[in-house]
Image 1: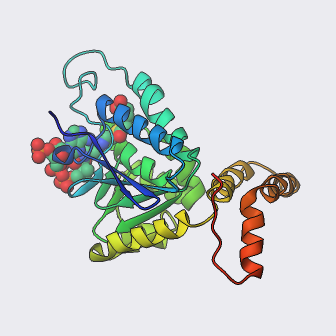
Image 2 (image 1 turned 90 degrees about the vertical axis):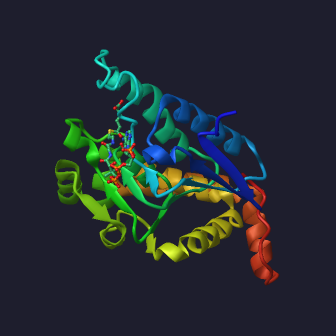
Image 3 (image 1 turned 60 degrees about the vertical axis):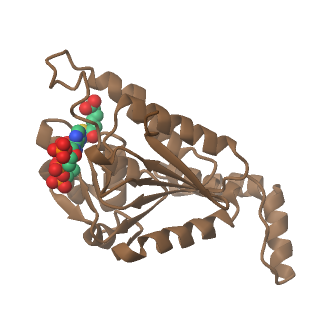
Length: 263
Ligand code: T3D
């Protein structure tokens, strides 16, 4: 039997999905997309999962689209890049952004092309110091995809977004943290512990509130101040009617840790 293209492991309430094509730096094939889609759906549907970690096997995180796949131009066949982006990268980016639990990208090595932008679309990115981010698209005559055109200017501003996307230069993880592209850069030897600690912390919090936090921050971006304040009032009302809020307040007043269960 062939190896799974996405490895699935559980540690308490944290589910780790590991892209598993290390020989090609975990670049995406249609088959790996389909396995990842199923794995994300399964994690979303499983009530015991309260945080998802996305990472890569071997020395890379993900080198984006597998450029050797049939239909990528190298085989002389007509390419269907638009179809690939619509069928695979768009649903993947949207699925990550709509997960009912927080999603952490554990960037263990190079993240290039759509691999970089799928990582950046996760809620929190923790990267090893030896890792790097490359908007590789311009080097092969493409434009950023995987959500890059939306994410990059919002994360680091237009000047840096254009600079990264046009040059396709390698951005070391340390610099990515310094400019606000990612949450944390840690020493390689500390990556496992830093990711596990963060994942366990998020898994113990109110998933419902964390998923709603992601949603209203994204939704507030094009809003004016008054509309964002109204959105906060509406969603705060929803949250306050849930069991997690009652539990959070009760735990605070009783000076005990809260036990959140909503998703
Ligand atoms: O359908 C569509 O195309 C639309 C969607 C587009 C989304 C995209 O992601 S477009 C961008 C695609 N990605 C790239 O252009 C990145 C290509 N890779 C690289 O530039 C380099 O591999 C890296 C800078 C990421 C890493 O360099 P390095 O020197 O550390 O490793 P390497 O030797 O280049 O790669 C190691 C192996 O992985 C190598 O195979 P080999 O020679 O050992 O058998 C290499 O061919 C393979 N590999 C790396 N990236 C890809 C890949 N194979 C297929 N596709 C790749 N993207």
